[in-house]
Length: 214
Image (cartoon, rainbow, N blue to C red):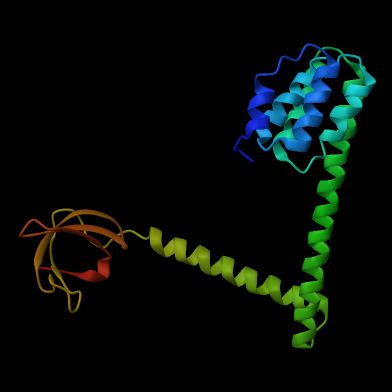
């Protein structure tokens, strides 16, 4: 939460001179505080007393799995800071946290893959095919899609049949400038042609929008 209540404001003004003061402030924030940034600040304050202290290192390590993102981030950052000061306990804790995060990521990825496979199996069952046949069909469809996209890119890159300075007539049906005469200013591709009409109006159209005047 971003907002602060009276307890948060009191904690901000409270002098903390020892580990005991810091832990007492933390417990007070857990019970009454609302601003996560205040809690994160207390994490860093507690960590300032933690060099070589196994109790504080354990406290910080436990906070790295907090459901509150600023608390989780502050605890991990504090461990890295202590590790940088040569604290071997903090270094070991930070490595355990990293291993835990990696294992959670792998577990989540495996869970997503399992859910996707279950969904694909349901789709295959509806179609009356095996899962392998379903995947083969999906691959063929994807290849067709990629081929179509490549062809579309090729078409979009084809050069225009017009040249700058040529006089053209607009052949777009049912448009205010249908039949109007203009001059090609730029002809980049067959889908990007800039024409200025005699009244000064400019438009960007495809080659098919104009006919070349003799």
